[in-house]
Image 1 (cartoon, rainbow, N blue to C red):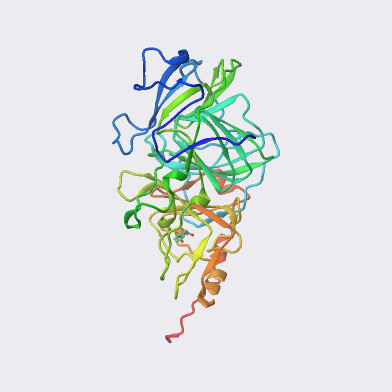
Image 2 (image 1 turned 135 degrees about the vertical axis):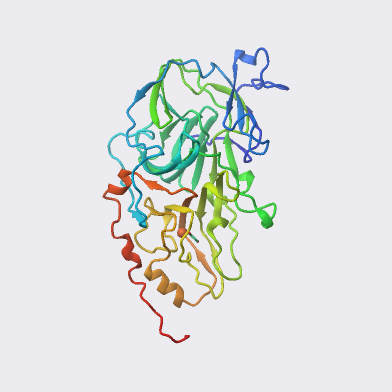
Amino acid sequence: MAKLQYLTGFNNEHETEALAGALPMGQFSPQKVKYNLYAEQLSTTAFTASRASNRRSWTYRLRPSVAMSDFAPMALGNIVTAPHTTPCPPNAMRWSPFPFTDEPTDFVNGLTTLAANGSAHTHIGMAIHLYSANANMEKKAFYNADGELLIIPQHGEMLIKTEFGRLSLEPEEIAVIPRGVKFSIDVISKHCRGYVCENYGQPFTLPERGPVGANGYANQRDFHYPVAWFEDNDNPHTLVTKFDGQLYQATLLHSPFDVVAWVGNSAPYKYNLNAFNVINSVSFDHPDPSIFTVLTSPSAHEGTANVDFVIFPERWMVAEHTFRPPYYHRNIMSEFMGLIKGAYDAKEKGFEPGGASLHNCMTPHGPEAAVFNKATQETLTPQRYKDTLAFMLESSLVIKPTPFALNTPCRQTDYINCWKGLKKQFTGQPE
Ligand SMILES: O=C(O)Cc1cc(O)ccc1O
Ligand SMILES: [Fe+2]
């Protein structure tokens, strides 16, 4: 595949045109648009959202999106939308990697929901899906009215064609597709597998940097947006949408990818997780993992995320006289984790690439017994954590597993045993 071009800068007012002069200058909605295009605005925040949080783009296209048939309901497959009523056990939970599919399966058909919280109706909370795809979506496009989609590949390369242009995506990168944006995914590798966070809440944004200053964490310049690209294709296409928890399909008599030019700050983007500038302790103790936040979806409560996307990348660990692995803890926030590559520092065995774990509100967790023993005995020298990339979706709402997640043979029902070796060490004597 030819190397794609991108525009850079998180949340910039990007502008791009696939045909010279297609983008109106000086105004958004001229009486007549060049090339006889239609102007259409996509608003992914309220018109009146604060200037800092406002997201919208103007597209200039062969036809307005409303040139389509009505939607008809279709089967939901394995997708679950919150609120869902399955009782959520407070147990620590873990899953082995989910197997690749051999049945021909495209990105949308292969979506399987692991957990969801909040409510898509009220634009609060999120869902966590797995994807497993080995086929292109062909003449099918999808948009999600229930939230934006954060795609976290674990295996295989994909091409994401969208109204705003094309993005290539491979493991160690992530992509975010705003609510409502039409897209279609081609598999470049034979098997593609990963995780999707469907964020029902406020769009993901970059966390504040506080006293860290003007640089560090995820820097704006490392976010890549597509350049305008369009198809003048009058063959029938199917448009699938998830709206209010249900799937619907409609017919288009043309390709939905007919945007010749666009301007705005609401568009799909991708980010290479290796661009994350890791900030960590250079003295002692283990800081809270909020230092590893790449993107945050704020809730109505200041400092309390609807969902944070956090990564645990390769880094140096130098903390002195410190228990270096993640500390034992109980947290009001609920923590879902996945592993993209290597091993995670709290677990040497059992948490594998393509697998998952869930530690809900106040569920105790921390390093397994073997990790505790090693970490309390080893001589501490500067150490490079290599070949590792885990992520966490941390939410202020309880993350409720679906019946699939609770009952799949991938669920490790013996997870709790990894802490069984943590025996009393107290002797009554200070050592
Ligand atoms: O539970 C986990 O493994 C995630 C986590 C990592 C860390 O470094 C500190 C706290 C925390 O919840
Ligand atoms: Fe944790």
